[in-house]
Image (cartoon, rainbow, N blue to C red; front, side, top):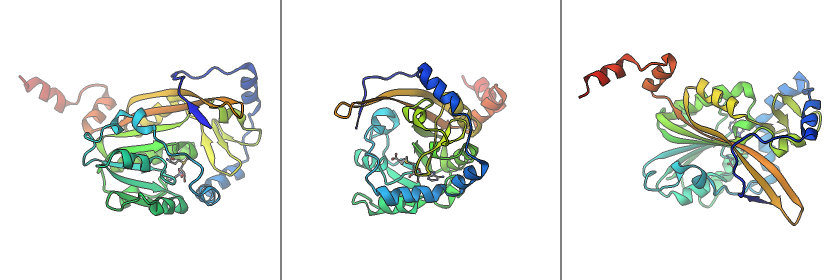
Length: 293
Ligand SMILES: C[S@@+](CC[C@H](N)C(=O)[O-])C[C@H]1O[C@@H](n2cnc3c(N)ncnc32)[C@H](O)[C@@H]1O
């Protein structure tokens, strides 16, 4: 299936009457028991996903350096360190490693199989990469990566598989290894994505959160939700927007609207933290301003 890039709108897409009714009719969530079981089995279900699909499911993501200017110049990235959380089998990191020869990449996933696939990849180079198993909602990242040592963190189609209650702790965990002023680059499913509208009854876990046939889960983000989430976790929002695309396959007669959210967030430094808490510059900054010529 090919993704075509002719459309690039940043608004929430308008639903047809039929789509709206379909969403409204699907109001009853799964039982509390099933919800808890899906949470307990999250890691296992992703591991089974990789057992079934090995490295064949996702295509390499060659678009990251096009979409995020931070990743487009090797010169700027000399000596920099990147962490990819939820790296899967490496579809984001291996293209990056090729395009940016001077970068060092930490990569983690909670699926043992996924991490093993990364390590078995012919391009894997322990001098330039560090792959490890870690549940970012539970295990401290600082046991694998030094505190405040990472310049850029990529979170690509990962947060959607985490239950909403655990998203904030996950972002706080990530923040512990990010340098103050470091950047999180984020892309994931957006509200009213085609896949969200196709779930039949019995797949809704909670508001905007669904379970797929294989037990993996998908949350569909609004930009408001994402902005609040990152702000609460002590990041400044640099940008956060919808990206509308169409997936088109003429041979199979497929033409469906895809919705993604894409954002860039900066970990607050202690000064920006004080700024955003009080709404006023901190005394230290005022003092510096008053004494400068
Ligand atoms: C859709 S895949 C995306 C993989 C990769 N980021 C990419 O761009 O191809 C989502 C990945 O997130 C991982 N994941 C989900 N929840 C996680 C968690 N709590 N901690 C670490 N990894 C997680 C899954 O195992 C899966 O490999």
